[in-house]
Length: 326
Image 1 (cartoon, rainbow, N blue to C red):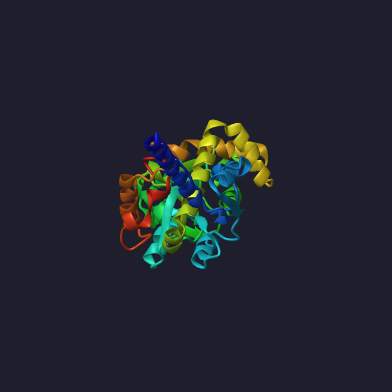
Image 2 (image 1 turned 60 degrees about the vertical axis):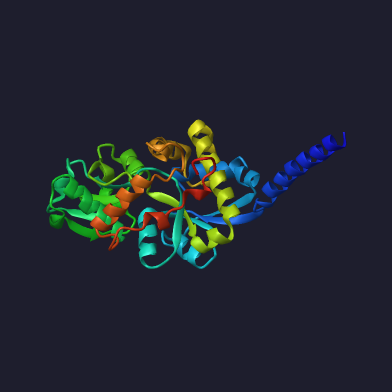
């Protein structure tokens, strides 16, 4: 009898000990997450996570911040004024080339969002030879434009680049340029609503690998200091994006609540466009696929965004993704 009691007490100690350990691993604190751009449907899973309380359930209260410029997220990470930021994968590569130990821990999409949008008369990117094409001024824009033109059999040196900032839609509607680099999931959707015959040439249709355009990032130092915070944040966002894919109608409502400047039809159109890219060929949402990242790293250097291929093993860390494959 005494032996039985001892065994029972030992088993209870193990159970309660495991429970305490799990509880202590919860961060139980707020965390700041900076978006890459103005809120749009690519961020739907983040807003769904907030609306459903997935962040609080994981032990982290996410404070979502809209950047004043596309470069603000990286600056806030480096200044330790933000815990996480969504970065364009090219900005991640450039930051690491500059010696910044920024690490990607969760891709939001599994496809490039970069494209060349063109006037109806431009039937192929090769037709841009001798014409003006708008770029924002970011190094990745030139790479995207050159990759697409070359992939279509054209000579990118014969395309006249014009810096237009982030005004692709206005520049195309106003006839200032024949084409412009932009994101097909936002500017492409907006332009197509106003000019349905607009051409859309996506970079991965013209030779670029299917890289994940937007990635949740943090500094390596912060990840080492607070791994539980990263795990909780990633877990909450995975739940948010899984719910978005399961119930897109509710995701539209949740996104509209957090981004009231967008009307519902606009969000619906963007979500319809972006939803297939959330997972694409990946085994699950948020997967970091080594062969895909290796192909991206080679392309990144080939088209001059960085001088040498990024070290994928150091630039990304899948350890924070929940489940056996994380």
